[in-house]
Length: 172
Image (tube, rainbow, N blue to C red; front, side, top):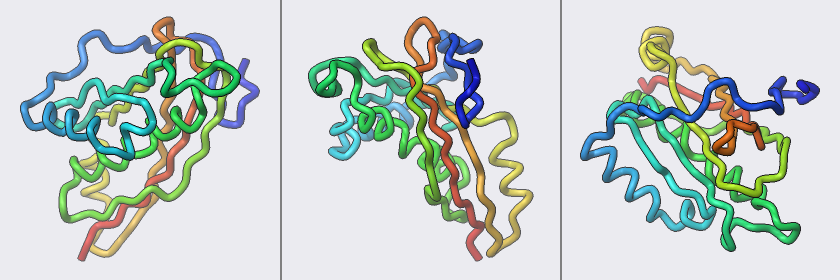
């Protein structure tokens, strides 16, 4: 059924969770541990599971436990959104480097199914995403980029979909 504004199917995601994510480096492993220690992120109950060495891939998980459970016995929507909120911005900031400003501009989340199991989200840039931005933006120019990420269970059932819009500007 695709009656959602984001056009997302409620059926299983045709892309199951990657069994062979890109390798982590020592540096991204440290970033992952640091991210998970950050109080604002720890408060969501989520965990960053994996960061690819080139920051082109990140996987997070939101466990279904006492920290993430709401009054009706499902994963709290704030935990779901909080878990995915900073990821695309952080990925772009790390891949583009200091010559760019990256900010979250807007977001919309749609809750499709109640979460009663651990949920996962995979963030991945297509080949050449950051190179396209580098080539397209002259100093002082900006653009908005939209990204969609789904929160799925191990069977691939989509429980929530978030559309993020990021503001990207090449500094002068």
